[in-house]
Image (cartoon, rainbow, N blue to C red):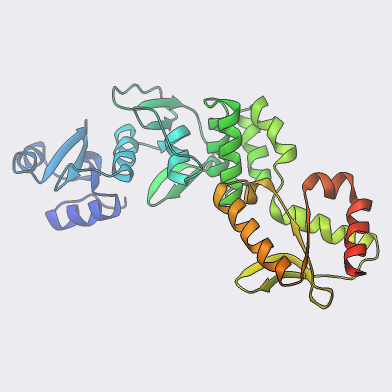
Length: 285
C-alpha cells in the first residue's frame, strides 16, 4: 500500500482488492474508531490486527489473505495452502500455511520460517504466495511420495511446471524426493522437440505440427497419408478426463481412416530408431 486508509470509502476500496480483508497497519484510524466499527458490525476481527469488512462469512481466498496479513511484512501463503491456491492439489491442514522470514507463532496459522528470494514469490488472485516451483519444493518436504507425484503431474498439466525454476529453488531447499522425479518430468514441448529431431535425423518427411482434425488438435500429422502422431506425456494424459478424451477422439479418427501412432518419452529417448521405422511404415501404407 502506498497510502493508509482514512475514510470508510477508502476502507471499502481496499477491502475490495483484498478479498474483503484489511489489516490495522493499512489503516490510519484511531483505536477508538476501529473499536466503533467493530461494535457496529462494519469490521469483524479475524486475527490480531486483521479484520473482515462487512461480514465474516469468508471464502477460502479471504481466509488465506487474512492469514498472510496476520503475519505481516513479506509473509506469503505456502506449502499445502499455496498448492490449493495454484490448483495443483486440493486439501490442506486444519490451519493455513504461511511462510515468513521471522520466527512467528500463531494459534490459527501453520507458520514456516524461510528467507525467500524474489524467484520464490508470486501473487495469485491478489494473494502473496510462493511461486509454483517453490510450492512444489515445499510440498516435497510434507507430502508422501505418491501425492508429490500427483502434484507434479497436475502442475505440468496446468503449465505451471518450470524445470529451470525448480532446479533453482532446489539449490535453496534441497529435496531428494523431488530431485528423483525431475528426469522423468519432461514437458510436452520437450517431447515434441525430440520427435522433430528424430524426423530430421532419420530422413522422415516433415510433419504438420499441431494439426487440427475436427474439434481436436493433434501433435503431428501427415494429412496426405492420413497419419497422426501423438507424443504422450503423462503430465497431460494421466488424469481421468484426458485419458477418456484421448480414447474417444482416437476411436473416431481411426474409424475415419486415419492411423494414430503414440510414443512416450521412453520411446523418444531410448527407441528413436524404432519410432522412425514405425512412422516410415505408417507413411508407406
